[in-house]
Structure formats: structure tokens, C-alpha cells
Image (cartoon, rainbow, N blue to C red):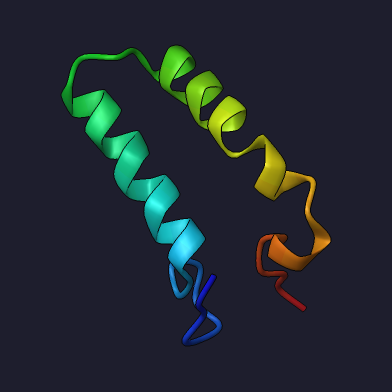
Amino acid sequence: MGAWGPGLFSDDTACDVRDEYRDMLEDGVDDDKATQRMLDSYADVLDDPDDEPPRIL
């Protein structure tokens, strides 16, 4: 994972999630299914403290 700043989309994982989610919506997948697919696809990242999302202090 690479991060280049403090912004929400300033790391590779956040950009990947955003892009894949948008692609699914553009392909006609409904929001609930797209969300569940993303949660399933990135479950390992969500459970990894080294890859946790940025926190706003």
C-alpha cells in the first residue's frame, strides 16, 4: 500500500476501493450488492491493522 498524503483518497487502497465500486455501479450493480461485494473483497484489509483506513484526529 502506498500513501502520499493525509486526504481520504491519498492511498492506493482507498483509490482501488473507490474505482472498483464506481465500476460496479456503472455496470448496473445496485448499491447494496456493490457494497457487499466490496466488503467481501476487502475483508482482509479491513481486519489488518497495518492497512486500516486513515483516521482524522
